[in-house]
Amino acid sequence: VEAPTPLQAPPNGWGLGPAPGWMEGSPLRFNSVARKAFAAGGSYEGMPPGQPLLLVFGGASVNDMLRNWALHVQRLALPYVVTCMDESLFTLAGNHGMPAAIFRGGSGEEASAGPGVVTTRWKYFRMDPRAFMTMGMLKVRFFLAFLRAGFDILCADLDVLWLRDPRPWVTGQVATSALISFADIVVSTDVTSDAAENDRASWGLAQELNTGMLLLRSSPGAAVVCEAWVDRMKQEMVSIEKLPKNMLQWWSNDQTFFNEVHMRATLDGFANPKATDAARRP
Image (cartoon, rainbow, N blue to C red; front, side, top):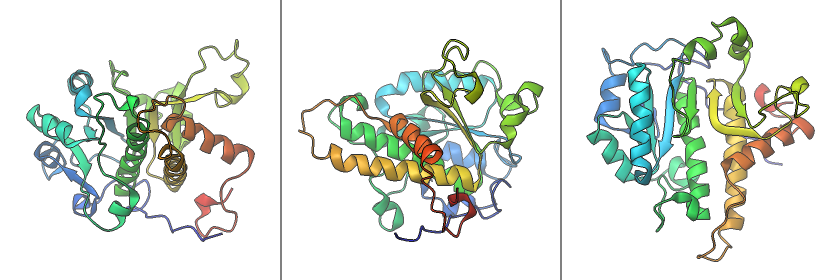
């Protein structure tokens, strides 16, 4: 068994927020709107540790839904970034005044991690199993890029609209959510009735976890889960590449493998007990 690569901690340390100049070391390319927001004197400067940066992801084909999502966030004056799966959305985001990021591409570690954009002949990524799994891997690589920069992140799908400021809940300021501030990852669940689905004792974790909403702390624990999540999707891509080019595949997605990683860790202890990083030990 190969020894795991040591965790890449943020310059400031885990949980302490981004360091000045963090963009220069990021694998991401930012549009002018984002650079201005994060610059000295910008609206995102000095975000306190524990306050989440909101993320949303997609391609140009869902531009209308994405703009609707962004308008709701802007009304609440919440810090957010559009993580772009293609160059077309990156351009559109800039044209509409939305802060956006995309992978730089090029050579080195990021190039070896996989493609930095999604390419497909379909307008809707889900019609193409390769494109859809690539999107899933990119989404989690975006998570890692921001976690390693020192940001806590709150990611929601385009069909999850923010009507109120979620920060009092995700930071544990509201009494009923106090325990959330101790978690590395908070995820939504498909459980609609804990009593009816006999899941009250496990807080929904025994059922399907829904990655349509995720809170990730800038912590070793969250980073390790994201690394394992990406690795599992890479394994699945090997099988997907063997599918006929015209095949529409619906049965696997990034949520499938988040649940698998979670259940494997819970039941089998996927972590390496001899790892040098405490977060990788069960």
